[in-house]
Image 1 (tube, rainbow, N blue to C red):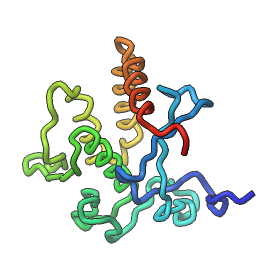
Image 2: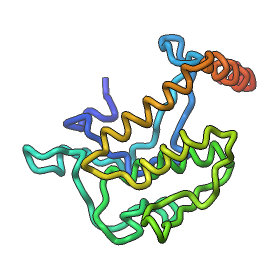
Image 3: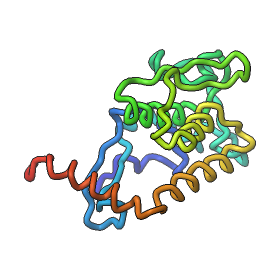
Image 4: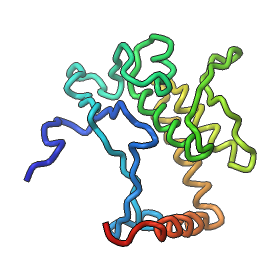
Amino acid sequence: MYHPFSHLSSIYLQHCDVKPDNWVLTSSSANDAVGGCDLMLVDFGRAVDLEKVTRQGEDPLRTLFKGSIAAEDMECGTMREGLPWGVDLDYFGLCASAFILLFGTHMEVVKDKASGSWRPHKTLRRYWQKDLWQSLFDSLLNFDLSSERKCLREVRAAFDGYIGENDRSREIESHLNQLFSHLPKKR
């Protein structure tokens, strides 16, 4: 049987087109995820097999590229500054996806003149667990390769901790079930 990614040599893929409309929520009876559903990233038409473009012995996740391949509103900070970019392009897309879920509009970013950090142009509302979201946006829009994996683990742990408090996973599951009830029964 043909597998669409059988030509890839590794699991080190850079998607290069992470954006809100490339995520699909699917139902899954085989998964123990919240609400029995999976969040799936689709459209790997621009994906790069990082092991094929990385020198042997080097970390594929540290591979850098030059130039811009994204639409202007989806360029990561380093791309906007004309610097070499890497996984930060996918991280920017992840931020843009989260932003559209929070605000219902596409994300614009600005560079803070005092700190030199990138941030979303809109301010988070205090009742949105502002500290959690601020940490996500700050870490993904301004990550440092030397501490990248550590900061991502910390952001994940913070979100996991929040969801685990006060049985919030049941609340999330209830909201997802309401959404699924609006989907057609047959496709």
